[in-house]
Image (cartoon, rainbow, N blue to C red; front, side):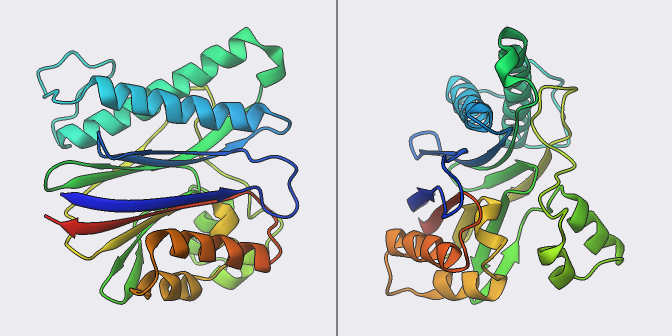
Length: 256
């Protein structure tokens, strides 16, 4: 599978630092966006630990199969790629716990993470928290991840509308994250990307202020380069007030 990609990260207009981290590793087929939480530098540390740990594990397990000795139980219902990503996320959680144990200044830090791991023909999406992965199929924008957030749980339960969720004061409260506690439940999904599809990995600094309709409009523009699309998405988020850090990573499937 041949992929082209571009990425842009920006602190936004109201934050003095950028606690988002990302990874773009076409050599191992790995792309990640992580949104750190914890204030001061702790959120930045958590997201960086997660990204570094995940990409190191994925690199070291390239070519591994189900007979490998995994640091976590191998789930036969999942693909090799899904098992690798799930194990990598859980290992990142443990590395965050180790960092907090070594420094009291980092206590309470956490991070979301969303990732795509692509092989020759297929791919896997994994995520914890409220960073998102979208795919543009034809002209339709599809959200591949479900937010692990309080407001999104209310929306799914039918007790809150999506428009109300966007304005709710608890909209930034996540219910699942890489936070150094028990091994997290990681959502993993195997997918079969098709030529021409575009994927977007992003932190909530984008979709909290830019609607899905606007996001789809940017991704549909085939005259713009992928870098221009990333730049325009960030500009739109800042145009909406830029209340949070913004990271946009766009992938395009060029050939099978």
